[in-house]
Length: 553
Image (cartoon, rainbow, N blue to C red; front, side):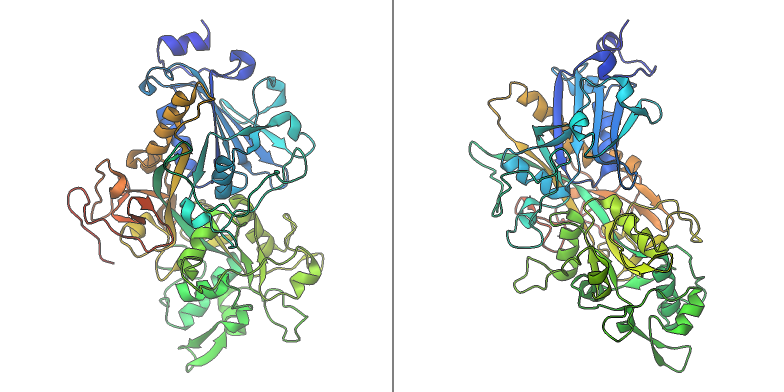
């Protein structure tokens, strides 16, 4: 009996693969482009809600530069679960996800009906893939083989980790920029520069479904983390009992929003400009690169520039490409940009060459995928140049720098509470609080936002559109389910992070005091007048099911 027959007749606990070289082409194909955020929740929904047990096969790209798996394209091939109902249950479904280009690619290509490079698994033999565990496959995709593994198709839905209104701001750093196609080496033709809205009424209307609130984090290179700890111990900000390198919420160093805004805006160009009052040394004023701080931290001074004559230690700043939600939300939270009139914008990118980098205070880079953010921090910490963003030669390698980056809060998870393991970078607190779900729910951590999934309400030229939108809607709604999030969320050494469901969801989710990580729900929301607006301050939901209760911290 074939796998297809098994899927149609019954659901068993025995695993069987669903691959195009055995089972042929899918009956339904759905393509989603946009943000990489909430990747774990997305995978959890596919596994637990959409796919019949044992039928799911996963195909991922491998980034040709960094080796990251699934950082640009993922395909899930499965039989529809019985709970999906008529038309989808038992059917062969191929769900394709493109995250290359981030949030901007979940909006503009849909609005413009613009075809994008999506992963293609149909028609390829098993020999075209490398096994990556049980029912999982991968392949390195580069410009040399892109025409084999990618084909250009119009996305059916967009997933974005912000709201469309704050992203579609022409002339600002929020407005999405384009990424080079691997198949042609060029950008997609016809990219508009003035798109300002997504229609929600009329014949071209889009459905917009809210997704949960995602925690973002501020990350720094390991040496900078230790220097901040040592400085804040001397300043009395951290207890004297904190061990340098420890990685609990109470031992993490802190940066406030005004300092973060000044760093992101490029107004603080050198670490020498950040100073402390040393309460352990007669209130002496010392810079962050003072020898006493370096000695306490057990580190050596990073590379100093030689262009200005000041022999300064440049800030190395990692933002994201225009339109990436990581940066869009950071600019809103730390700079009120571009929502507030006359708000200061983010710093401009530094060209990727040694001359410009050595002459820049700060040095600013913009990785186009979130996985590259961690790689860039490693390059700065270790004096390497994997990404081509760290080009100043120093001895046998490249400059070692103190770097700071905006990122999602669910990366580098193998670091212990004592600071061992993982990659050589760490998260820090913002305004005294770590990026935990509990702190979001208590209203004390600000760098987070909800997102949305959007798709056209009608598509007359697609006979399967009703079934496709049924699948997309099921996926989107379950992304905001507390039961899904509790399984998908991440445990860091300093607490639980990932995403929280909302009491404004409409399904009656209740927030608990104290916060319950097994039922992650927050009463705070950016929703106002029926829509998510991530440029505004989140406020408590006065109509929360069970009555509003907010934990005071």
